[in-house]
Image (cartoon, rainbow over all chains, first blue to last red; front, side):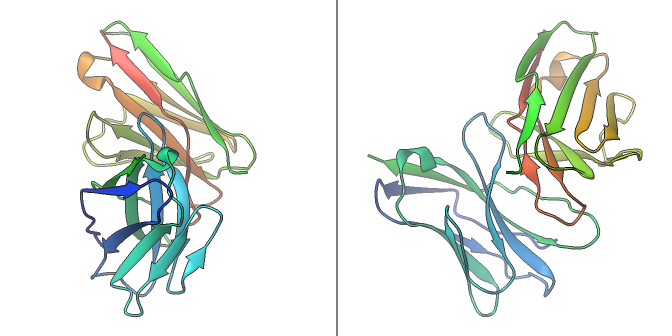
Length: 111
Length: 115
Protein backbone atom coordinates (compact mmCIF):
# COMPACT_ATOMS: atom_id res chain seq x y z
CA UNK A 1 0.00 0.00 0.00
CA UNK A 2 1.12 3.54 -0.72
CA UNK A 3 2.62 5.59 2.09
CA UNK A 4 1.11 8.81 3.35
CA UNK A 5 2.57 12.02 4.73
CA UNK A 6 0.79 14.13 7.32
CA UNK A 7 1.85 17.11 9.43
CA UNK A 8 2.69 15.93 12.95
CA UNK A 9 0.42 18.40 14.69
CA UNK A 10 -2.21 21.08 14.16
CA UNK A 11 -4.29 23.39 16.29
CA UNK A 12 -7.83 24.51 15.58
CA UNK A 13 -10.13 26.90 17.40
CA UNK A 14 -13.31 25.43 18.77
CA UNK A 15 -16.22 25.95 16.40
CA UNK A 16 -14.02 26.52 13.38
CA UNK A 17 -13.41 24.10 10.56
CA UNK A 18 -10.42 21.79 10.93
CA UNK A 19 -8.70 20.96 7.66
CA UNK A 20 -6.28 18.06 7.90
CA UNK A 21 -4.07 17.47 4.85
CA UNK A 22 -2.58 14.22 3.65
CA UNK A 23 -0.17 13.54 0.81
CA UNK A 24 -0.23 10.19 -0.96
CA UNK A 25 1.67 10.88 -4.15
CA UNK A 26 2.32 7.20 -4.92
CA UNK A 27 -1.28 6.10 -4.60
CA UNK A 28 -2.40 3.47 -7.10
CA UNK A 29 -5.62 3.51 -9.10
CA UNK A 30 -7.26 0.84 -6.95
CA UNK A 31 -6.28 2.28 -3.58
CA UNK A 32 -8.80 3.98 -1.34
CA UNK A 33 -8.08 6.81 1.09
CA UNK A 34 -9.23 6.05 4.64
CA UNK A 35 -9.31 8.30 7.68
CA UNK A 36 -9.36 7.10 11.27
CA UNK A 37 -8.83 8.96 14.50
CA UNK A 38 -7.65 7.84 17.90
CA UNK A 39 -8.62 9.65 21.04
CA UNK A 40 -6.16 9.11 23.86
CA UNK A 41 -6.19 5.56 25.29
CA UNK A 42 -9.01 4.42 23.01
CA UNK A 43 -9.20 2.28 19.89
CA UNK A 44 -9.19 4.02 16.50
CA UNK A 45 -12.51 5.28 15.20
CA UNK A 46 -13.42 5.05 11.53
CA UNK A 47 -14.28 8.44 10.04
CA UNK A 48 -14.63 8.25 6.28
CA UNK A 49 -13.12 6.82 3.12
CA UNK A 50 -13.17 7.47 -0.61
CA UNK A 51 -11.67 6.49 -3.95
CA UNK A 52 -11.77 9.59 -6.15
CA UNK A 53 -15.00 11.44 -5.51
CA UNK A 54 -15.46 13.75 -2.57
CA UNK A 55 -17.34 12.14 0.29
CA UNK A 56 -19.37 13.49 3.19
CA UNK A 57 -20.95 11.85 6.19
CA UNK A 58 -22.20 12.94 9.59
CA UNK A 59 -18.68 13.24 10.94
CA UNK A 60 -16.63 14.84 8.20
CA UNK A 61 -15.98 15.58 4.55
CA UNK A 62 -13.20 14.11 2.46
CA UNK A 63 -11.84 16.11 -0.44
CA UNK A 64 -9.59 14.19 -2.84
CA UNK A 65 -7.65 16.09 -5.51
CA UNK A 66 -8.27 15.24 -9.13
CA UNK A 67 -4.85 13.57 -9.49
CA UNK A 68 -5.52 11.72 -6.20
CA UNK A 69 -2.07 12.58 -4.89
CA UNK A 70 -3.46 14.34 -1.84
CA UNK A 71 -6.60 14.71 0.21
CA UNK A 72 -8.05 16.82 2.99
CA UNK A 73 -10.25 15.75 5.86
CA UNK A 74 -12.59 18.50 6.97
CA UNK A 75 -14.28 18.63 10.34
CA UNK A 76 -16.77 21.45 9.73
CA UNK A 77 -17.23 22.63 13.31
CA UNK A 78 -14.49 21.32 15.55
CA UNK A 79 -15.30 20.62 19.19
CA UNK A 80 -13.02 19.83 22.12
CA UNK A 81 -13.99 16.17 21.73
CA UNK A 82 -12.40 16.16 18.29
CA UNK A 83 -8.95 16.44 19.88
CA UNK A 84 -7.23 13.25 18.73
CA UNK A 85 -4.58 11.78 16.45
CA UNK A 86 -5.91 11.55 12.90
CA UNK A 87 -4.56 8.89 10.57
CA UNK A 88 -4.73 8.99 6.79
CA UNK A 89 -4.30 5.52 5.30
CA UNK A 90 -4.37 4.26 1.73
CA UNK A 91 -5.16 0.66 0.96
CA UNK A 92 -6.50 -1.58 -1.75
CA UNK A 93 -9.92 -3.15 -1.48
CA UNK A 94 -8.75 -6.58 -2.57
CA UNK A 95 -6.54 -9.19 -1.00
CA UNK A 96 -5.07 -8.44 2.40
CA UNK A 97 -6.90 -5.82 4.37
CA UNK A 98 -3.94 -4.53 6.33
CA UNK A 99 -4.07 -0.97 7.61
CA UNK A 100 -0.69 0.69 7.96
CA UNK A 101 -0.86 3.34 10.65
CA UNK A 102 1.76 6.03 10.22
CA UNK A 103 2.38 8.72 12.79
CA UNK A 104 -0.76 10.71 11.98
CA UNK A 105 -1.62 14.31 12.83
CA UNK A 106 -2.26 15.28 16.41
CA UNK A 107 -5.16 17.74 16.26
CA UNK A 108 -5.69 19.93 19.30
CA UNK A 109 -8.94 21.87 19.45
CA UNK A 110 -8.48 24.98 21.51
CA UNK A 111 -11.33 26.56 23.49
CA UNK B 1 -23.83 -0.11 14.02
CA UNK B 2 -20.43 -1.79 13.65
CA UNK B 3 -19.62 -2.04 17.36
CA UNK B 4 -16.63 -4.01 18.55
CA UNK B 5 -16.02 -4.72 22.22
CA UNK B 6 -12.98 -5.98 24.09
CA UNK B 7 -12.66 -7.61 27.46
CA UNK B 8 -11.03 -6.89 29.77
CA UNK B 9 -10.35 -3.19 29.26
CA UNK B 10 -7.27 -3.46 31.44
CA UNK B 11 -5.38 -6.27 33.14
CA UNK B 12 -2.38 -6.51 35.44
CA UNK B 13 -0.62 -9.85 35.73
CA UNK B 14 2.54 -11.36 37.10
CA UNK B 15 5.45 -12.26 34.87
CA UNK B 16 5.16 -15.82 33.56
CA UNK B 17 1.38 -16.00 33.59
CA UNK B 18 -0.92 -16.12 30.58
CA UNK B 19 -3.58 -13.56 29.76
CA UNK B 20 -6.56 -13.95 27.45
CA UNK B 21 -8.16 -10.96 25.72
CA UNK B 22 -11.54 -11.27 24.02
CA UNK B 23 -12.73 -9.31 21.00
CA UNK B 24 -16.38 -9.40 19.99
CA UNK B 25 -18.31 -7.91 17.11
CA UNK B 26 -21.67 -7.01 18.65
CA UNK B 27 -23.88 -6.21 15.68
CA UNK B 28 -22.25 -7.79 12.67
CA UNK B 29 -20.54 -10.98 11.67
CA UNK B 30 -16.80 -10.55 11.44
CA UNK B 31 -15.23 -12.95 9.00
CA UNK B 32 -11.88 -11.27 9.54
CA UNK B 33 -10.40 -9.95 12.77
CA UNK B 34 -7.12 -8.20 13.33
CA UNK B 35 -4.95 -7.74 16.39
CA UNK B 36 -2.75 -4.69 16.86
CA UNK B 37 -0.32 -3.60 19.53
CA UNK B 38 0.50 -0.04 20.48
CA UNK B 39 3.37 0.98 22.72
CA UNK B 40 3.34 4.39 24.46
CA UNK B 41 3.66 7.32 22.08
CA UNK B 42 3.86 5.00 19.09
CA UNK B 43 1.45 4.10 16.36
CA UNK B 44 -0.51 0.88 16.00
CA UNK B 45 1.37 -2.13 14.70
CA UNK B 46 -0.47 -5.06 13.17
CA UNK B 47 0.32 -8.33 14.92
CA UNK B 48 -1.87 -10.83 13.10
CA UNK B 49 -4.88 -11.35 10.88
CA UNK B 50 -7.39 -14.12 11.48
CA UNK B 51 -10.23 -15.43 9.39
CA UNK B 52 -13.04 -17.32 11.04
CA UNK B 53 -12.25 -21.01 11.20
CA UNK B 54 -8.69 -20.61 9.89
CA UNK B 55 -5.28 -20.25 11.44
CA UNK B 56 -4.10 -16.71 12.00
CA UNK B 57 -1.50 -15.07 9.78
CA UNK B 58 1.19 -13.41 11.85
CA UNK B 59 3.26 -10.39 10.89
CA UNK B 60 7.01 -10.72 10.72
CA UNK B 61 8.58 -10.65 14.13
CA UNK B 62 5.44 -11.69 16.02
CA UNK B 63 5.81 -15.07 17.72
CA UNK B 64 2.80 -17.24 16.99
CA UNK B 65 3.52 -19.53 19.94
CA UNK B 66 3.56 -16.60 22.32
CA UNK B 67 0.52 -14.78 20.98
CA UNK B 68 -2.15 -17.41 20.44
CA UNK B 69 -5.10 -16.30 18.37
CA UNK B 70 -8.38 -18.14 18.09
CA UNK B 71 -11.23 -17.05 15.83
CA UNK B 72 -13.72 -19.83 16.34
CA UNK B 73 -16.90 -17.93 15.58
CA UNK B 74 -18.04 -15.02 13.45
CA UNK B 75 -18.37 -12.77 16.49
CA UNK B 76 -15.47 -13.73 18.73
CA UNK B 77 -11.71 -13.77 18.52
CA UNK B 78 -9.33 -14.25 21.41
CA UNK B 79 -5.69 -13.32 21.89
CA UNK B 80 -3.76 -15.17 24.56
CA UNK B 81 -0.43 -13.78 25.65
CA UNK B 82 1.41 -16.79 27.00
CA UNK B 83 4.14 -16.55 29.62
CA UNK B 84 3.84 -12.80 29.67
CA UNK B 85 6.87 -10.66 30.48
CA UNK B 86 7.16 -6.95 31.29
CA UNK B 87 8.15 -6.18 27.70
CA UNK B 88 4.73 -7.47 26.62
CA UNK B 89 3.09 -4.62 28.50
CA UNK B 90 1.23 -2.68 25.86
CA UNK B 91 -2.15 -1.54 24.55
CA UNK B 92 -3.72 -4.37 22.56
CA UNK B 93 -6.44 -3.43 20.10
CA UNK B 94 -8.58 -5.63 17.90
CA UNK B 95 -10.54 -4.74 14.82
CA UNK B 96 -13.12 -6.58 12.76
CA UNK B 97 -14.49 -6.49 9.27
CA UNK B 98 -17.19 -8.40 7.44
CA UNK B 99 -14.64 -9.58 4.91
CA UNK B 100 -10.99 -9.04 4.22
CA UNK B 101 -11.90 -6.15 1.95
CA UNK B 102 -14.27 -4.12 4.08
CA UNK B 103 -13.82 -1.25 6.50
CA UNK B 104 -12.24 -2.26 9.80
CA UNK B 105 -13.99 -1.27 13.01
CA UNK B 106 -11.89 -1.17 16.16
CA UNK B 107 -12.46 -2.22 19.72
CA UNK B 108 -11.69 0.10 22.65
CA UNK B 109 -8.43 -1.67 23.45
CA UNK B 110 -7.01 -3.63 26.38
CA UNK B 111 -4.17 -2.26 28.43
CA UNK B 112 -1.90 -5.05 29.64
CA UNK B 113 0.61 -4.45 32.41
CA UNK B 114 2.97 -7.27 33.29
CA UNK B 115 4.73 -6.91 36.62
